[in-house]
Length: 312
Image (tube, rainbow, N blue to C red; front, side, top):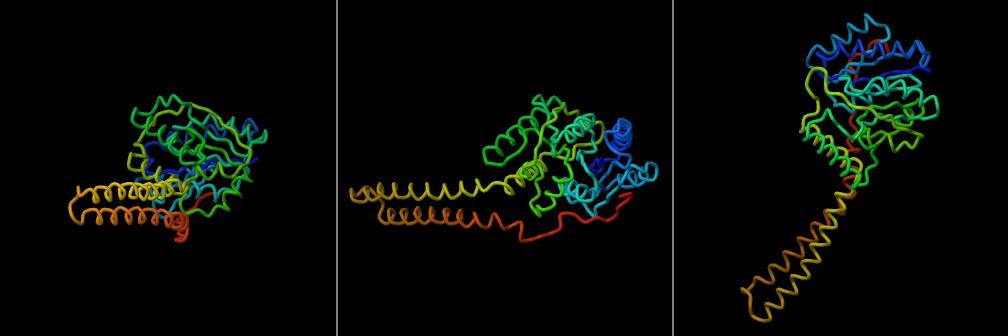
């Protein structure tokens, strides 16, 4: 079976020499063990890097015929770069992983074996120790997974886009023409037989993280807004509660008005303000139920544009 390992890259010039050597050795080993065929390859996706990343990928494709390169026209983001590699790869199996080698490439052997045993999707899952993370990142990440679960989003806990997908799963993924792309939630929706491979995630060998707090927050908001309408329903619930509270307060204000313990004109103003404030929030929540579902899809912008391809 043909395997393609897709690795998105953004400003990874410091890490790429190590990645080329390690991943080349992994692929050669899989071929030597006859787990994958000779036509298997590595595919590096340059996501609009501003350093020498693409030049290094191009040079590696000339040196190693088992290396392919895709360069996007600009920085479209990690998820779009992954999708570009997935859609471009003509293979029986595709593994996606980051080029920084924090995900354990030795797990690929077990992933391939699981696929041969019948699993269409194999998720690489971090163990719960998260020893390589800072205290802040560890606890914010765990909070993110708990929050997504509470909001009804189906995620594989501690899975970070390191996975193997078979040909049928990739074909099914191509049917999802989503603009608000969040692969960690889309792929579990495919419903094919799957399993998990557990590993210890390493720290970065070189370079800087491409997911600072700002991007992590944006990533989380993208996942929540793309796969859960619970926040909108909470707004609707808030409207109902506010309306109910306005009725209760109106009774209290009217009582005080009848007893004479009130400033003239204050009761009527407060009753009207509270009631219409509640109605407004409730109405916005109901309208938001519909707008939230169509907002991103109607723009129909391309998720990525390929500038150059080599050895595909």
